[in-house]
Amino acid sequence: MSRIVILSRAGEASLPVAAVNALRLQHEVAFVQRTDAPSAAQAVELLRGARVLASTNVTLPALDPDLLDRLPHLRHVVLYATGFEHLDIDGLAARGITVTTLPEYATNAVAEHALALLFAGATRLHLAHDKAAGRAPHDVSLRGVEITSRTLAIIGLGRIGRRLATLARGLGMRVVGVDIDPAAIARAQADGIPTMTHRDALGEADLVALTASTIDGHYPILGAPELALLDHNAFVVNVGRPVLADTDALRVALRRRELRGYAVDEVVLDPSDPLDALLIAEGRVLQSAHSAWWRDEVLARGSQMFARAIQSAADGAPIHVVPARSRAGLAAG
Image (cartoon, rainbow, N blue to C red):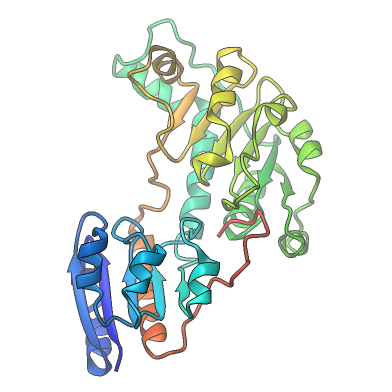
């Protein structure tokens, strides 16, 4: 029998009822409902004796060496998330602790969100809404472009990037891809996605989608030198982490009209800053506040996948384990 501690905002409701009952038949299960991460002292108490820690990123305590020294029984961490760049995978592996993620629970939703951001930037739909509500300058232009037949460069050919390619090609877009992981390139080419160098893809792109993972030493992947390769009418969308793009360089390019628009699934510009506020008011920046994954279907799917991952870890056969020293590609989850 393993002791399992599950931290989340939803508490016991984060798992299907049948899954909770199945876990409790074989293991000691404790649900802790929180809206933030526990402190180190709180974590020591909550996780005392725990073999499995399951958590969302919001409620995950800082798994630093000091805390881990005080959790000698911990062997598995199960994240209700795709990204894991905030964890020291190698350090955890050295202690015999596996990390499980949910690599596929939000793939389609995030790819659809990237497409929605592309459409919004091209049609200026968000600006039209703001203008109708009186929140945009009366003289701002709503003129947009069509995206069918335009070239989309997808930077990061993991699950999300490849799914986005399928959606975009279905709309008649020409898609090219970029990645530094040979395996990701091979999978993309098998899907019929032509691949290019980073420089060549940006030189041909009308639209750019950042769908890459965040890998130490490999970001930003869109900075001032890369932005200079883009046509001044290009649009960029970022459904990866904000650090994939140099926000300061983007500000400069947008203010100089060297880039037509930028959409990011986060909040990176400050509406209280006059210059940032102007870019937002003109509709040249669209910020979707990390909402790409927030879908009915994702929540239902994620609940099932989270339960299966927890059960597997508790049974000593974890699935979707992040391998140590795995951060060697751009491919997103």
